[in-house]
Image: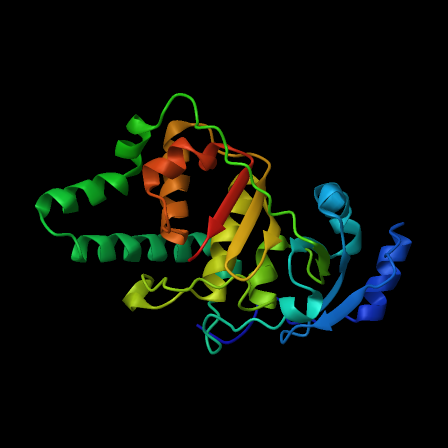
Length: 267
């Protein structure tokens, strides 16, 4: 454990603007800038909801050249970087080097919490089945539920000075924030490194990219969502551990896990 964030480099705002110009992007008038506590720069401008997703995809496609990850949000750059860290003194570097270790620990802690608070053996048996990928895979419906309509395109398009979307929660702490989530190891709250770890492993396995983030909500654009029942079950269990509000593992498996858009909201 350490207090180190994912990326230590300071990104100069002027350099970000020059890089965008070199890549052929014209930043609209009225742009705003901010620097996160990590030293990473953020450049943002207002975007119409009709054009937001198209512009986000265009900037994502250019990320390898610009070195900046685009994020849609309802927060201007100053507000985006003003969130409170989930734990200001601790950033687990395994979010970078071994993200699946963190995901496994958090998932095990959530199951332990559910078992400890179960009313009887029958409920405990149900929770164990819900967290068993092989048993959950058998229950996965043959056709996923229709995806919910997601309107979270945001009114701001911000570029964060990092080439990886999964690192954004570690560089812009407190975005998102998970209130009332205290089911991590030793009943701790969600850390920024937990967000980064889940996003990192989902990016590695499924091509999930951070598309939208605000105070208590996050949306991922998933290029290769799982389709194999066992892989779907494993991902659905992780999704529930990450954000249990209003869902269970079966609802995730039968719904968004197999779709190209994953939304998480913490109440």
